[in-house]
Length: 176
Image (cartoon, rainbow, N blue to C red; front, side):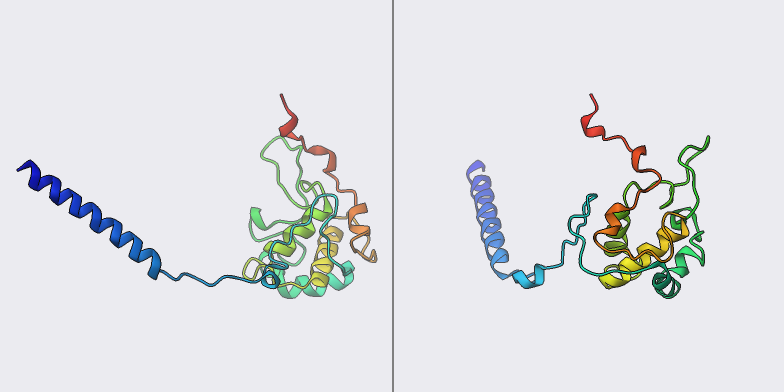
């Protein structure tokens, strides 16, 4: 009886190995991508501005892009349709839960650019051109009273923008 059980278990084990081996040979998910297809896939802009692309824009130019691509979620003046879509106002030092907006929370303008570039608009991420991202970023910064509407935002001027909450963050990786 034990021998039959051992033989049965051995046959099941062999069958599993053969099945796994054959299934690995026949599964064809996706296709390899080329180096040129990888370019632009990981579009990260660091806080110091490294990774910013060529291009420029002003808040005046950004208003038109904002109205056509962003206003549905963020409303006409950035007040948002919910707490998560609010872009202007806010106060990180309020007694209650702070309202986190571009003007009250974000420490670097380059981070705003990076977020808009990779995640907006929510229904079509990465669909804005680099120039449109500079324009929209300029408009959002303007709505928050951080820059003048005529400032030409580009890889140089963007890194010079001093955000209101720049010194409000603590690097917890250094905390002991």
